[in-house]
Image 1 (spheres, rainbow, N blue to C red):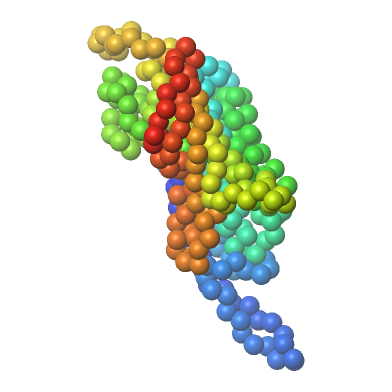
Image 2: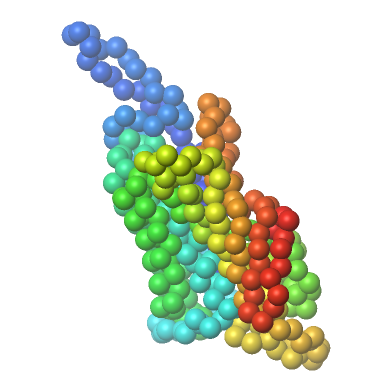
Length: 317
């Protein structure tokens, strides 16, 4: 899994230079200073140039890093396609959708900070996210080890489209894509594939990853007499377990026999907390809540799996 969303979010979150604007009042031109964290009231050239330069720099650096980490040890070949839609019980497709969504949202917010309206900011955020994700797919297409995946591109489009459609329709995100992770016993059998350290397993061990669509009921009930806490959401999750290989589990690796595991999908229904909707005047807490909001926090959830009894989790992460 080639995740770049979190690095992009954190990098863009510190891009907040101070800008000043002159306005004419009663024939005089007082100097109005906009605080560095406040959005500009109109498109501001200084912030736009800084933002474009930062995104361009991040794009170049992240793609160069990605190439050295994933591709340079494998030979290049002619552009070709690869059908991986049945691998990892489709968990990697959810990862692609989450990545695209999680890039588009903060990039759009930085364009709002630079003074652009909702519509333009949403399109710019979606465009940047799609550019990042498409570049990765093109890299795959020229690598002998992988190939251009149309199902990955579909997942990228869904993630980007989910963000864009909501922003254009409601000017807010009523359905938020999130993820959560817990350690599993499967990684120890294939640490080269599933990760040998906790940071690697967070990226590679699909057995411990769960992807969520967190729906905020209060945002749909604004015009009714029904009142719910703005921060309370209903989450639907998707996960899978028992995987030590892509399409199937190998019986042995490097001459070492592996245990036999049942591969199965998991579906979850539970509550979630939309931290971005918690009202606070503290700027630091507001920004912190927005960053953390990509993660589904531990909360009660019901697990459903084909052929297995429903399982209740008092706190699932």
